[in-house]
Image (cartoon, rainbow, N blue to C red; front, top):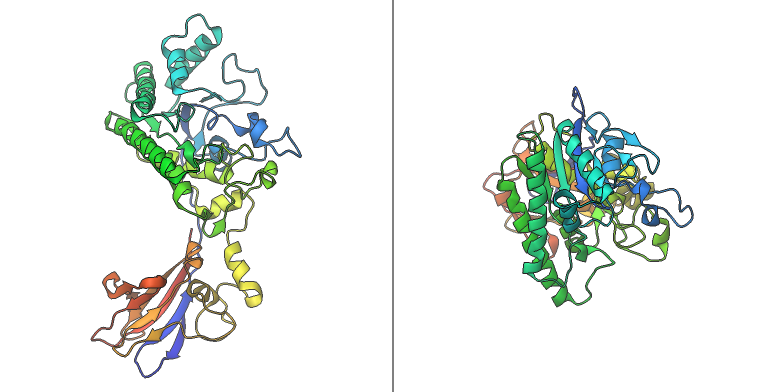
Length: 430
């Protein structure tokens, strides 16, 4: 903590502190959580989907991983999907290769899964897939049903969309009827394909109507959560974020929505793979988090979610890059090259210079103080204001009722009867 000098003729003082603390604690567990997934191409390991998951310069080696691969690689003692078959043809069913409990079948619709489970006829691959799937239900801790995106049509009405809900419900019923009693079942909501570059609707009115229809579908799917031992993974939260957060970023690190030219190499800061439809690795990590949230709502030992900093590290980025781009030669987050009592990280969040002393507050005649945080920097770090009457160890956050937002992003600390000292606290987001 660094204390500043009195400003003007008030009894208000400012100081700045920057807090840097990152930790990822993995709780000890006797055995990893075993999940079986019924899904499509978002669930099959990207290693086996190289038409879109491999760069043009190396088309046989995927440089993007999906949520299954990310969880197993980064939570190996906490999460499992069974044994692994590295070569195609090692299973005698639609799994082809990959993890034992991963029934992600590219191109499958919820309707196609219904036929496989309820009416396979004499199709030997259907029959064998159903047989193997049924046998695996007794070996896992939960089942995830992550299907429906392939069924989705943005031009369909609500009645046609509701068929997807019915098909997903029937898959749930089949799992329930063929699994041990009380086995948790997770139902994933349907990702809104209108958020993808491939399916994006140019006309805003038409796009808004399509989005509302998908939202209605997902609200109805989420109602399955009222069934016994049934939980919901809100995958639609990811596509909602892609719709609404423009530009898309993770802790201030920006992502390219889509670029048909540079995207051919599947660069890590592209939100989608080169086909413009399948989620890139960062988005897949966010999908993993939604699945983990559902798992953690019933699991005995919660599995740590991916922090934003971890996601950026996994895709080969420096989580501190937004700060480093701003700081240049000014140094680390705790340094104070201009000697104004505000460490660099506080200066960054306030949008002030690290090398030229500038008062962060503007004082009004009635004693109010105004400061203006940088909206861009606040993507990377949180900024709060603490107050003290004595400058001792009585620092507490300024009550939210005492802070008034102003037009343009400024904040006004309302005057009080007691003369107070203030200091800023800036903390990088986890």
